[in-house]
Structure formats: C-alpha cells, structure tokens
Amino acid sequence: MKTRILLADDHAVLRSGLRLLIDNQPDLSVVGEANDGAETLVKAREHRPDVILLDLNMPGLDGLGAVPLLRKDVPEARILILTMHDDASYVQEALRAGASGYVLKKAVDSELLMAIRAVARGETYVHSAITSKLLQNILPDAADRSGDRGNPWKGLSEREFGVLRLVALGNTNAEIAETLFISVKTVETYRARGMEKLNLQTRAQLVKLALKYHIFDEPSQSGNP
View 1 (cartoon, one colour):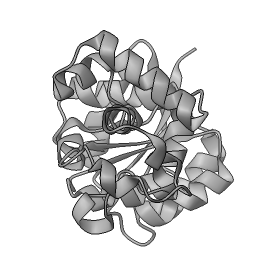
View 2: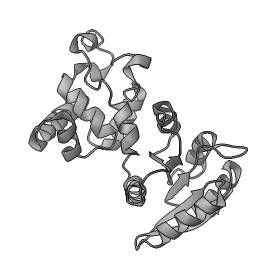
View 3: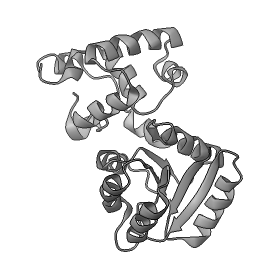
C-alpha cells in the first residue's frame, strides 16, 4: 500500500514539482493539494492522508498555526514541515506543536523522499543542516546536571545524554558514531543504557521526553539540562 501524501504550499509551481517527484516513487502517492492553512484542514479531513507536507509560510493560517489543528482533526496523519527557514528555533516550535519532521526546501530530492518515508514510519526527521546547528555544544557539563533530580535527563552520563539527544533528532547509530567519534557498538551500548535509565522503549517516547525538557534547545537559550 502506498503512503498517501497531502501537499500544502502556496506556490503552485513548487507543488507541481513535488507532485511529479513523489508520484514517480513506487511507494508514494499525492492525494491532494492545498494553497493555505485553512484549505489544508479541509483537504486533510477529506483525504485522510498518511503524511502532510506542510509549508510554514502561507497566507492566512500559516503552517505553525495549522499544525495543532491538524493534529486534532487528523491525528493519524504525520506532519512534515517543508520550509526555507533553517533557524533552529523554528524546528523547536514545529516539533512542540506536533510536527513529526522538518526539512528544508533546498534539500536534494533524495533527502526529501527519505524524510517523507521516515515520518511515515513513525520516526522524527530533522534536516541534516538543522541538526548541525542543534548539536552545537551537545555534551553538557555533568556538574550542571547533577543537582536537579526532578529532570530524568540529569541522571544520564555525558555520553548517554549526547547519544540519546542525537537519537531523538533522528540520527542513525552509524551517524552518531561518526559525530561523536566512537564505534557503532559503543553507541548501541550508551543508547541501551540511557533508554533503560529513562525507562523508555521507543524513539517516539524519547522525542516526547526531549521536547518536555527542552533537550532540543540551544544551550545559550535554555541552559543545559
């Protein structure tokens, strides 16, 4: 069965290009298009898509405003933000509002398709360029995290925290190993140990906990957890 996609963008030429790209994939299909946030809500209720590819900047009701309404009306749909904005704060707002992923319009075709498939599987996807910004100063000072027992992230070691934050951002074990200059086996060990400490079983649960404690925030804005 094909993954059914709703395109929401106020640029008809872009929508046309996206439709051509997506419909050429054997496992993907565009079921509808929308020009603004209000029309997106109508089309989403009508078509019940699996994935909504949503622009942030649209006339009237914009993408960020539409996300919580879409989550309420079509909770089964996964929302993937497609935008030109590479500001990490937009990513945080979108994910907190209920989006499942964030990809830039400058993404190569293969990355966009990868993002669509990832969110359709229930994963969280963040464009690689944004991930780099979010990962600045990824490893916190253990002393800063040791005093607050109310935050479960404080009980993790520096490496466990770093690995799980990367997992929450949608990185694979291999990508994490490359970023932190450790082996894949070591990543797996830290990942398993950290998930056990947090009493979590799935990435979706991890992302929810990361959002709750602002783990995606830049340290300079919110402080290390």
